[in-house]
Picture 1 (cartoon, rainbow, N blue to C red):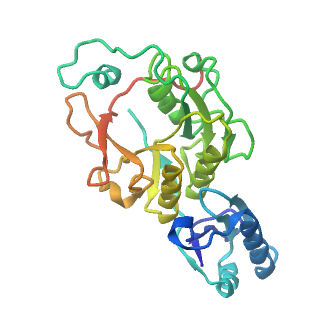
Picture 2: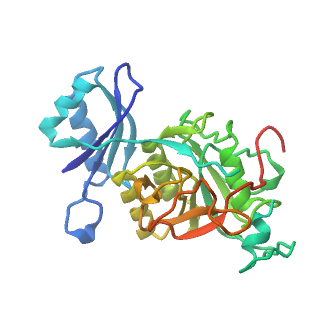
Length: 309
């Protein structure tokens, strides 16, 4: 019983796909594949699909069970014998945050008092995995607090940021000057390109990396200010992370639309954050609806950036 998701290209004339089993929890009574089963599934697809018709991009052994592949349209036909049916893998883009934000989040009501007060040890002992365009690890706002990370765009351990969005978000959550959790450890997980876009399957791989990363048992928070169209596969991964005790915080999105139509914003287990302006009204770009859990400052926010320290 498997799920296939398809979208655009890497191989010539190919589609990006995600194959993930529906059996996600032992409590459901469904049988899980396990790591060996995932490897067997990968081998089976490689045996069925002719050479040149498929390329495996990621294997998921934990938060999901399956893989992400590039597959030609004709290659899709060969998977029918394995009972695989398509679900589209969505492209994902960064949710941009356009200096009042810290002043607002340390008090319950307006007017702003011109003071931003936070515990000096806020975030100490917590690991924050910023799944985004990477992080400018040389920035003074993060000095001494950069942990291990991974780049799923270039497939290496250098999660440096060439776009700016991930650095901005890392500064907003965790920066010494611009952030709230000023003592947290920041793990840069790059899943979006220099243009600020990428694949949902890479986002899933980043979430799995965060879950599997050995941080000595400290609390883990995933920060994801990104999103694409609705993806049940992504939402299922958020559920798995939540069940494992990880906190997943995501942006509602910036399309002035119902957040329930986007992932990971629509995942029930995520803390979905919409954007507010300095008068406490919703920002004119923010997504909205029943999938939103909380509003937070998101218009004209000053934070860290790339190109300097």
